[in-house]
Image (cartoon, rainbow, N blue to C red; front, side, top):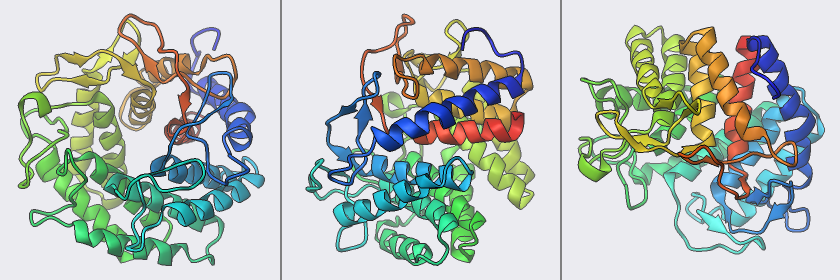
Length: 369
C-alpha cells in the first residue's frame, strides 16, 4: 500500500489481490511440505520454509484456509491442498480417543500426548469448510465423533476445561463457538446450534463483565473472572467476540447479544494506539496499557468487528493498520509483531495467521467490495 485507501471498495480490491495473487499461491507451494505431507509451521519474510515443530492448530487452520479458498472460487486446485493436508493431519495427530494432539515433528512423530480444546475447535472448523466442498465425504461424522470426545472435558459449572495452566478460559470457547456456527450454517444439525447457544449464553452471563462490558480471559472453576496478574483484557479478543456475538445475535434476533457485541467493540477501541494505528496486545482491567506491542491477529479482528459494528471510517482505519504488516520482501507473507517503538520484530511469518487474514479479507470483500 503506497498511500491510504480512498474508500472501502479500494481497500477490498487491494487485500483481495494480495490474497489471491500472492498469499494463497505462495502458501500452497512453499507452505506445503510435499515430501512429508504436513503444512509448514512458518515461512521467512522472503517466503522460504522454516523448520519448526508443527502445531495441530496450524495444520487445521491451513486445511480451513484452502478449503475456503476453493469454495470462494479462488482456485479449484486449493481443494486438493486442503483435502490432502487434512488427511495427513488426521493420520499424524488423531489420538485413539478421537482428540487431536497438540504438536508433532515435521516427520509426523508426535511430540507429547497433550490435546487442547483450542486445537479441537480448529479441527472442527476445518471439517466444516471441507464439508462444503465434499458433502458426501463423511465430515459430519468426523465432527460428531470429535464433539463426542470433547464431552469428557465438560465442567460442572458449564463449558469445557482447557489444558493447564489456564483450564478455565474464554479463548478456547470462542473458537468452539466459531466452529459451532460454521457447522450450523453448513447444515450440521441441532447439536451445533445447541452448542453455539450454550457458549453464547456462557459468554453473556460469565465471560463478559457486566459493569464494563469487557470480555475477560481467565476464570476459576465457577467462571468467576480472575484478578491481579491474571486479570487480562485483550483488545483483539474484544473485537473477535464482538464479531461472533453479532453474527449469532443476528441469526437469533437477540438484541441483548448485539448490544453486548457493540460494547465489546467499543472496549476494543480503547486498546487501539492511534499513533501506530494498531490494536495493542493487552490492557489491564481499567483499560490502561499492559502490553503495547501489537501482533498481527488483533488487527484482523479489529477490521472484522469494525465492518459489522463500526463506521466506514473506523473500518478503513483498521484496514490501513493491518496493511502495514503485509509490507515484506516476498509478497504474500507478513510481519507478526509490531513493537511499542514502531519497529517490527525480525522473525518468520507464522502459518496460523493466514486463517485470521483470510476471514478478515472475506469480510472486507463482502462488506466493502
